[in-house]
Length: 188
Image (tube, rainbow, N blue to C red; front, side, top):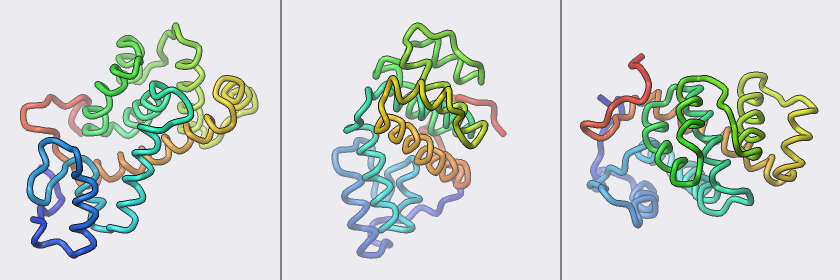
């Protein structure tokens, strides 16, 4: 069960209500004061929450590189943090964006996948190296710039950073999956 206190919109500040309204726009399954995922927690700090929401939208819907590589970066990050909700939400998005099932399964298991797409391999290596080493060696950097350009490198960094924050939020508040959804990772 989530640690986050549930609030109705009537219990929110005016700023929280405004951000809630923007985040809830166009979403299904929104209840009074509840969106799910990291969004309810982000309402606790509405100014920062709105900026995080906008950054997530920019990464997911207006990337300068193919969305599949952003989704792969999100999966690598979610697996590192064993973020149940993150994986639950983004595994189908990654699949829909073109990340192959065998790559998804290997990342989920914590193994380096066998790649058929060079971009998948480069994005995976970049993100895994950045998370594991907290920096990127010259060879990995050069390969990533060659495939994605400097702007693509920055987008992969943005995805790893934002979804680290998302995973930390989800794990700290123990955000629940929808009822009946199986846990992607063993319970901690």
